[in-house]
Amino acid sequence: MKTTDLPRVAMVGCGYWGINLLRNLHAIGALAAICEAAPARAAELSEQFEVPALTFDQALASPDIEAVVLATPAETHATLAVRAIEAGKHVFVEKPLALCEEDAEKVRRAATAHGRVVMVGHLLQYHPAFLRLKQLVGDGELGRLRYIYSNRLNLGKFRSKEDVFWSFAPHDISMILALAGGTPDSVLAVGHSYLHNGISDLTTTHLTFANGIDAHIFVSWLHPYKEQKLVVVGDDGMAVFDDSRPWAEKLVLYPHRVSWRDGVPEPSKADAHPVALEAAEPLRLECLHFLDCIREARRPRTDVAEGIGVLSVLDAARRSMASGKPVAIKAPDYVEPAPPPYVVHPTACVDEGALVGAGTKIWHFSHILKNTEVGRDCTIGQNVVIGPDVTVGDRCKIQNNVSLYAGVTLEDGVFCGPSCVFTNVNNPRAEIERKSEFRPTRVGRGATIGANATIVCGHDLGAYCFVAAGAVVTKHVPPHALVVGNPARQIGWVSHAGERLGDDLVCPRTGTRYRLDDKLGLVEIADTQKQFAKSA
Image (tube, rainbow, N blue to C red; front, side):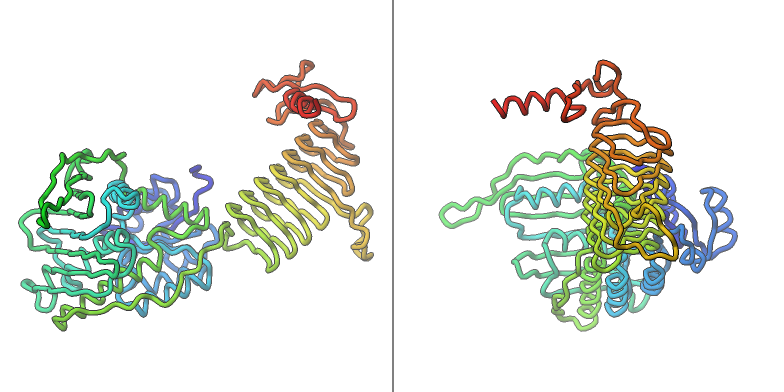
């Protein structure tokens, strides 16, 4: 990922965990600003990371900031997320998404209404060991899953406003829901308070799923040693993800099975073997995933719906601890809509009735008008206007300050340089209506139009031609022709790769050979041979 392609992000909250996010965003090259309540701390970090220190309101008002990362106190997450979404920003919010499902629903509705990417910081879903474990499960390496349990144990860090389950368990719940494939039917939780009355210091929680999987979570901050272990048991094998181990031992596969002899189960043990992993910082991978989702308009792995699923388990466990009884969970009755398969910057506009292909990116202050079709994987730069009634093929690149008017057609792979000009009337007057006189212009596949060139309407540009910067095209341009000047005149030929050809008509980049044909113009020799073979 090129730094110039990265969304610009403001880091909001630079405390105990926020500083780690700040460090990664800066290393990646996406950090644009920091928002920190303590003035001295803000000034220090601003100087250290060479970005401005802004208030939250200033960050939301800045057109240069596309996203915010929230690592503020949990009780502020939902409110700040909704404000950021309504300001047109994409949002990464540290866990938990909110402290109640009602507030989380407000975030979900705002994200849907404004079409913003919202991601919850369930870090372990981005850990290489868990990703590999999830792949093993998906590939059937463990057979049918039966049981999952996790231990997250340590001595401290003690909290006085949230219990150990809310503090420690969200990561484990997130992993278990991802492996089990849905929300549990019921939750039974037991908590024990020793340091603060009513705040559990250790909890045991049991989850029951409709597909027959059971899961168990044990968390404690009153434990003599640190343990972070996830165990997955299936019919055909078992796996252990132990994050306290070195990378070579973090994920271990146990191909144990249970054999039945005369109706009696017997263990069938096999040698355990570590699963090879590529070491990487999960937090960096998590940040990169967020940035990729913004750039590609993809739904995050840990999106709002996933965050609400985790929150529903947390809330059910709280109610179960209070009542001493299992609590049923109702599956959500909504389906999260898929984001558009293309990227539109908050300052850009795509009119109703325009069609945009998957993978296309439309950047700052650009406008796609009605009855316009833009193909797949195109890049539309800043301050570009396309339409109405324009067709753009796949994989086109249109640089800044270009307007494509009614009647223009770009075939696949066309490059339009900055500020190149298309006309659609030969003799325009501001006071005379000449829409009935629009002349069509077709640009052939793979053609290149240089910066500040002018294409006078009614003239076609052949496939893979090259119009030099500043040229003024006043007649048809043959395929592969290189034209320069005002009016544009041909001075040579270019290859498919855009290289100027010498007298030998061999592309210096690819070695492709061409020949001149009286009817077809410049023709690749290999293509000519294929056509001859077909006719023979």
